[in-house]
Image 1: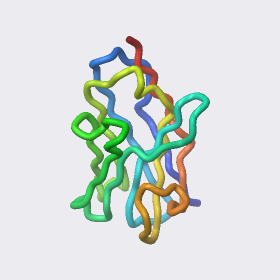
Image 2: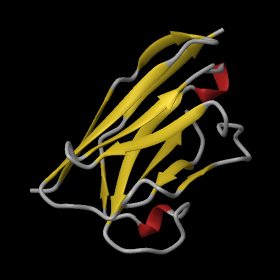
Image 3: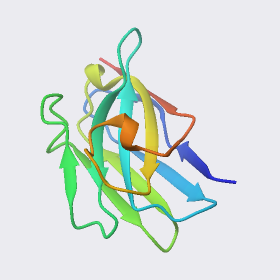
Length: 124
């Protein structure tokens, strides 16, 4: 059974840090991404990492580049999202996604498996 299990969310003050984890089981995936969904808004792409970790992409429009870092540990089948200098606008439910093939990394339709989400709330 394929599963992605996120953890690490919670309540944090603006300017603080959080590290989200996503543990995959059931199969090996090619690449991973993090998406987020704020209340009343559509789910949006946050960050992507390739199979070997050498390619990473971020959502520049949402100003996460330079504050968030995506990484992976293939030995543990785990992907991370380090969130630094968080802002109230980062408040959202964060989802881990995994895919087997390629395609547009920012398009959620390209992903084959999803986690249940972990809530991040940033207080001002």
